[in-house]
Image 1 (cartoon, rainbow, N blue to C red):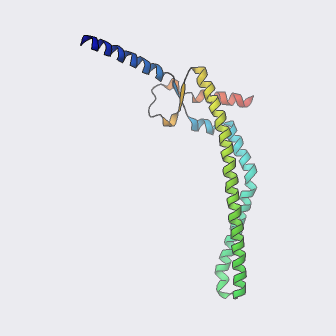
Image 2 (spheres, one colour):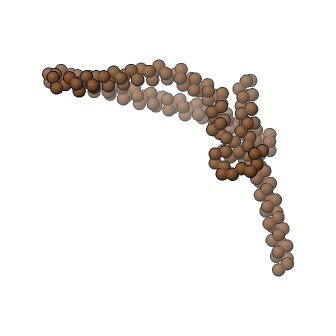
Image 3 (cartoon, one colour):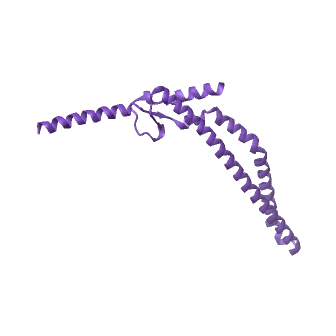
Length: 171
């Protein structure tokens, strides 16, 4: 029985040592903060504005014009001749179809742009996180928002990643 207790205590001691050692190789990083402060994200936001602002304005004008035509139709249709009513209804239907087509195209283009930019941004951030973690001796990096408890503030490498990212952007 004594041998069993000695072996068990040695096993537990080694297990705790390994756990402590493994925990010291895990870092956390606040990805939300990093993405929001990323120079690439700010640049992507600027490019988005430049690329899509004019189309967005045109869509808003189309929408207002269509809504005005519909209101006008609803207001005046009881007093209109049937041929005028049909003509105006066809015009409204055509404008609605064009608006819907333009809106879908706009949404597809903006989604594609955002997906491409997000991929670039995350690829760069991942590279910087990997570099910082490697320099500091961490083997695993976890997003801060997925960690329930982190006793060791030293394992938060968010500020180091931000510094590295800003330094890389200046070059």
